[in-house]
Length: 220
Length: 259
Image (cartoon, rainbow over all chains, first blue to last red; front, side, top):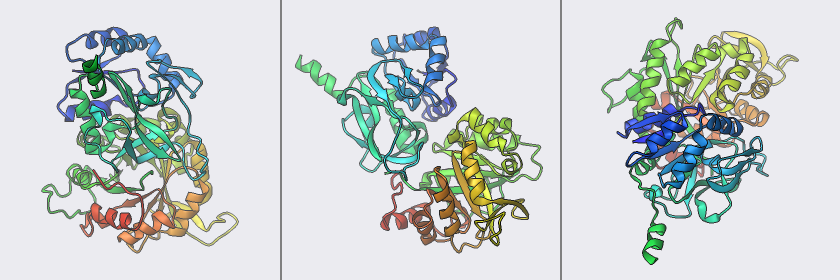
C-alpha cells in the first residue's frame, strides 16, 4: 500500500492513475494522523508529489500536521518518493519565497538563472537524465533515457553523495536525489512514459535500502 | 539537452475522431483513445485533443474521453476547443489533462489567460493562435493577423503583439497555427514561427503544414520552434513517429529516441 501525501498541491490524481495502471494499491493521506496510520502498516510506502509554490505547500503541510508525520516516517525508515515540488521541499530551504522547508536532507533550491538567454524558464519538456550514483530505482535507466520535467527551481543537496542523477539545462543540476530510505525526482515519472512507470514500479517494490548501505552493514 | 517535442493533434467530434486515421494495428479506427494509445506506444512526446463538437453545451463526452486517455497514457497531453471559462479549464485538468489550450475565447476575453494561469499555473495554459498572412499595415506591422472561426474572421490584432500579450497574461506556451499552411502539407510557416519564437520567452509550438520529415527539421531549426504539431502525416500512416524522429536525429536535432 502506497500512501500519497495530499495537501492540495497539484494533480495527485496523475500519480494515482499511474499506480492503478501498475496494479499498485494507493490511498490519499490528507492529515498527519492518516499518514502516520498508513506509515505504520507493514510494507508501507509514501509518495510525496506536488506542483505549485514552495511557501504555500509548506503552509498546507504544517496546517495538516503532514510535515511532522513525514519527518517521523523518514526517521522510521519508511521508503519515501518525492516528486517535483516534493523533491524540493524535502530539503532545508527553497529560494522560492525564501521558504524554510522540511529539512529531511540538507540543501537548498535555487532558481534557474541560465546565462544562456535562449534557455527558457520553466524548464519544460523531455530531457536526458544521467545516473551518477547507482540506485535500485534507477536500474534499467540507460544513457540517453529522457524524463518529463516542468520546473523553475531545482533541488541542490549540500552533500554531493545525495545526488543520484543529473540533467543538463544550461547548467548540470540534480534530477534525482536521495539518502537512505528517501529518494526524490525533479522529473515526473508518472508522465515519462514506460521508463517513468518502471521507476514507479521499482519504488513500489523497494525496501528502502541501497546497495552501498547493505555493503556498509556487511563491512561493519 | 532538452528534446524537441513532436506533438500529435487529434480532432474529436462527439467523442469520435473527426478525421479518418489509417492504422493497421487498431481495430477501433475513429475512436480517440486507442489511436492515442497507439501514438503513445509509438513514441509521441505529447498529445493534444481538440474538441470540435458542434454544440459545445455537452462537455461530458469529451471529459469522458479525457479521463479514459489519462488512465492509460502516461505522457503529457492537453485539451482545447470551446474552453471559455476557468471552470471549463478546471474540468479538463481534473479529468486528467496536463494543460488546456485556449484560442477564440482568449481573443475575445484575454483575461481568461490570466485567470487560468493564476488558478492552475502558467505551465498549464497554452495559448493557441490562428494566424493568417496579410498586407503589412499600421495596425498589423508584422503582416500576420490573428483570425478566429477557422480563419474566416480577421480580428485586427497583430500576431506578434498577441503573442507578447499572451505571455504577459501568463500563458506558458504558444501554439502558432498558420492558417495559410494548414492542410497543404507543404511545410510549416517558418518566417511566422521564427518571428513568434524571437518575440516571446516561452516555448513555441509550430502548427499547420507539416507533411514530411524535412518540414519538421526546418521548423525546429530555422523556425526556432520548441515543438511541432503533426496530424495528417501520422493519421494517414505516411510516416511513423519513429521515422520522423530518426530523420531529425540523423540530422542532429535532439529528440527522444527511447520510449
